[in-house]
Image (cartoon, rainbow, N blue to C red; front, side):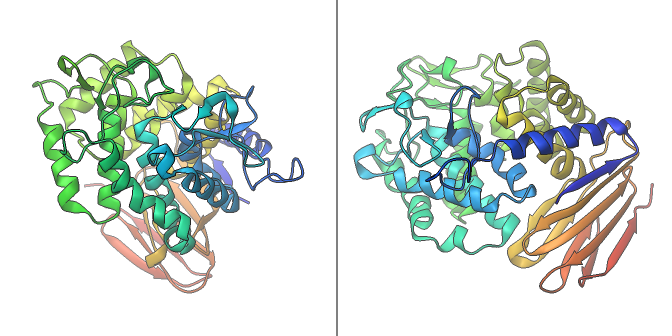
Length: 403
């Protein structure tokens, strides 16, 4: 089982809480007939939601919940039908039934454009973590990837520019452009563009991704990008997810834009902690490690019972702080320390990367030691400019030149 140790007791306590709480949410055998699943939504709602599953999946993998991830993602994929214009269902009960709370009929159910692409991207990201060919070859998932960048876009692209639009209403049951439900009047939103862009890149559809990027570049006003498009044109107000998910999914990471985001995140934090749980992932990605750690501690100190918090804290404490980038299909793991000044030493043991069982020991920003406990063959571990091919039972220690 995944374990974390550190010279900072706070980290060990936080991980112990997050691991236990996340595993407590597993519902696989809680009732007869349950799918392999975990709770992903409000604690008052015994369900799993598409947005939540997407963001909990990395932490779930680290905790060994690959069967749960696969079953839930495939269940969402199967629900995206022509009658629903290729939108997946928003939420299910653990036995696989559609959650009536968020579904009235095939023309009136909660749906948000980013979720369509987020499900694709996070499922393909699970292939990076696991190397399990089912994430690529399963007929339901493969069809979902294809329909999401094909028929879904065509069904919702009134002007033919390759970008799906929402109706611009305030009714989430008619569909919104963004995860930020307080911005429902948007026709197109930054997080919808960003998730679509990320999936296109992941699928190797670079020409289409480049067109998305070119469109978004036109949203710049010299200080920051617009959060989206309304009936009156570009809207440059603070957008929460429609801003913060843009660099997270790699659409644009301009330093000036990141500065703007950090300022807004401080002065206008979201009302829902779910939105805030993305902040460490975003900031670690761009090396803003002290800020990422401060937001991680905010999540930890909240001890919030929303399941997404415990799952993402696991992810932030392991993949975030250690800068793990898995490529299990190609037997590669990249490590890049993001330890803040407060943490001198961090060790994550029994990290699952494909069929490899790995330990990563990090001392500040300078020294990394990786041990491959077991696996099907050599694993190439890259730290900085050094790469080592490690057979099971082997270790490599890399110390960077401080200059």
